[in-house]
Image 1 (cartoon, rainbow, N blue to C red):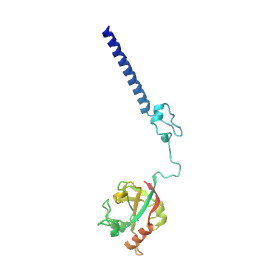
Image 2: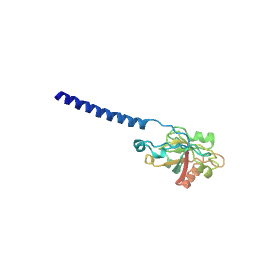
Image 3: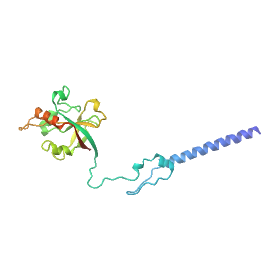
Amino acid sequence: MNMTYKTINLFQDFVLKGTATVLLVAVLAGVATPQTVEAGEHLPLQDPVTTLFMDQSSIGPSFPESGQRKGFERTVRFTAYTSHGYQTDDTPFLPADGHDYRIEFEKYGAVRAIASNDYPLGTKMRITELEDMYPDTFPEGTIFVVKDRMNKRYTGKNRMDLYLLLSDDEGRMDLAKSLTAAKQFGVQTLTVEIL
């Protein structure tokens, strides 16, 4: 009699644990099963578990409207700097990526560089407002590249530094003119398109 009672208890424990396991697997399978959605259609919320774990903002596809840029845009606080001694380290023309700003200036007549701690070196971006401010230096469609780093205190602060190296009337580097322009630039909020 005692053996039968233990057998029944073991059987009940097995059934209860097995049922719980089956239910857990069924719930997880429902959450993990990918669902396809046609364009313009919304994903229906089918059960409370899906509702609990689904980010409501991601329901339905999101496509860019015609004419929108495909890059990610972000509003950033900008300052400007030059190769003037007090604005850089002891190698004022050599940014963190190792390229020499003087060589770039000689080749292209301008340097299109940004200093940022929040993007990898080599990240390309477009800043259309700079085209209006400096049309001779940064013509329409200018692509800027993250080539340098800022002081570590600016990491994660949504800050970038525009490198300005302007030319004189004969096309030579003019550090005095560049420093004046950097000071006049001050602090500005600009829209950056990350490419």
